[in-house]
Image (cartoon, rainbow, N blue to C red; front, side, top):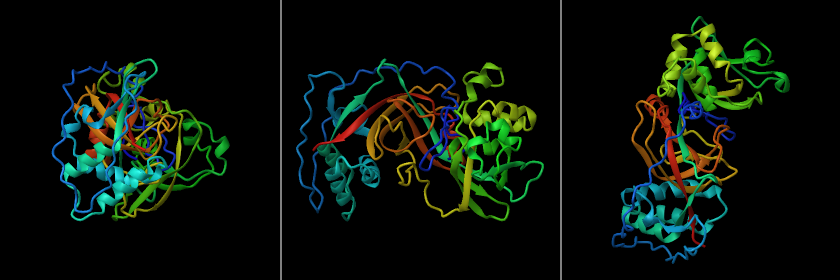
Length: 386
């Protein structure tokens, strides 16, 4: 979706295919720092629970035995940070995103029923429900290495209906000769048999392609949504690392904002040469902006800070996940990200078991934060009891 939320190494917004990106632009940057293993105290005891006016059938979790090989099953109360979670927000995110997953249908139905009660369930009721219905198991890389959290967002870019000296980069439609268009350099030289749907600044188009979709705003106030239509089949290559290696940006200063600012300052042949390091090129469709939230690969609107993109070879859309990411190494990075999220999207640069791209929302503020996310990551699979 947008301006590089993770230029940090990847990204793209994806609407069903997701292309890849934003956080891996950086993903290619700096080696992930070692994730500290803080000592955890005894599990937090849940508060006294007063059931809602429309009771939910009680469930007694039957946790798998904990004397087997890792990962061990844990009650949610043992998760780091569980006591300080917004449990009502977690339950809402689960109820809105669980429908795409076949497993755990009973838990999903009960969550939706609970959210439909009036008044809405309290934080205590939500916590008790989640603790009754789910257990956690940490997911680890085979080699024990740290995972990586990056971030993306839904960008908004100025655009023009006709080109000028500043807005000279075309938003191209799916070409008739898609199989033979070549790499980014060839396409920009005119190899694609396609039409210009709008015109953008070159650096904005580059970031739109990383995100995979975004909103275009024209001078008369018209808003259009550009969505992924096709790609040229080339491998995505992050430009953060080569920019740092060439001394164009400092090693710890390759955030999305920093990369975009450099490209804007060097707009023209110099910036295009750097952008051509990434041979992958995205084609779009353009339609009126309907004002709805961005939709991920699972076909469900994404919720800011509650939705992640994952590798679908290791995760299932609609699956709840607990993330803990501390110690980001980019300038301007926040200290940590922790909480209940839903796996609802994917991207070509999101690969591996312990790898996630956090959806940050829409607009400049979301983009600025997303571009600074590159944090070592731990992930727990949250599984409903049967």
